Structures are given as C-alpha cells and as structure tokens.
Image 1 (cartoon, rainbow, N blue to C red):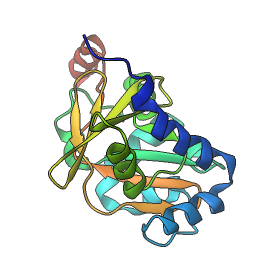
Image 2: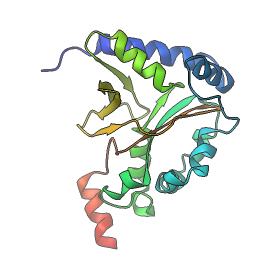
Image 3: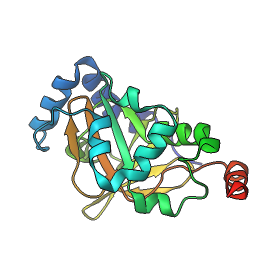
Image 4: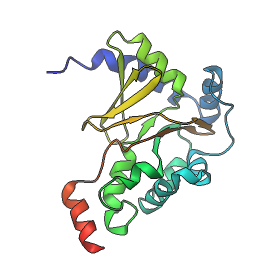
Length: 197
C-alpha cells in the first residue's frame, strides 16, 4: 500500500495556489524569477499551435474544443505530448468519434497554475520522499520524481514520461513538453475507433 499523499501534495499545492492568485503576467514573472526563459506574450494555446512538434496535440485540442480554455486567463501548465508520443497511442484522439476521450486525455495533462521546471524540481527536492504530486484538471494525480538529471512524470494509471526539450513560459501559463502520454483512451473506445478506419 502506498503511503499517504498529503505530504507530497503540499509543496506543489502551495505553488499552484501562489500561481493561481495572479494573472498570466504574474505567472510569467514567477517563471522568469525561477530561471525559466523570458515569458512570451502568446497564450498557451497559441504556443502549442505555433510549435510543429505538437501538431497532433493541436488537432486533439481543436477536436475537444478546449482551445478557448488554453487561450483564456489561466494560468495553466500543460504537459504537452509530442507527435511521437501520440504515434504509440491506440486510436486517433483527433477523430470526431474520439472527442470525449481526447478531452479527457487533455484534462489529464493540464494542471492549474504556472509551474516551471525549476519549480517542479524544487518541490521534489523539498519533499523527503523524493517525489511530489499534483492534481490535474481531470482530478487525477501526476507524480514527479528525478532519475539522474531527468524529471519523470507518472500518471496514476502507471504511464510514465520524461520532461523533454525546453519549456515555454506563455502569457497565461507554461508548456512543458513530455515524451509520452500520461493517459490514453479507454480500450473499448480505442477499439471502436480503430474499427471505423
């Protein structure tokens, strides 16, 4: 049985509370102070749209009608799977038949607040267990830990990914690229989508 999560949530919950108190500009300033790249004047939605490595994610975002959310005030941190991460997924989450599954997958990759990689590493380091957790917009938990210099994020279903590439501090949050999906479509839904093709 896993130990209680209450202590693991405290560092990141505090960060989320602080980030949620300000507007997107304040979130960008917090990221800049933590050593992140200077914030962009573009929203999270525009940042994802402009980055060609997130083409599939953008298609899923459009299909799930969540683009307006990520263009809104926020702040949000999106753990953004690359196109290569989607290639291994069962089913086409950008397909109209997979709209609900795509929306659920996206919410499981979004957390409230603007968190830079430095914020996440600091939370892991402060927590005695070597891990920190954060609740997503889908009410699932993401667990963050370090393996050498790499930051690993795990979904509560056991899926794992590494934070890769450079983060982007947007006007209303942060985009954190990851090399895998942290949740996938339900097997029955994926099978139904595959039968349609």
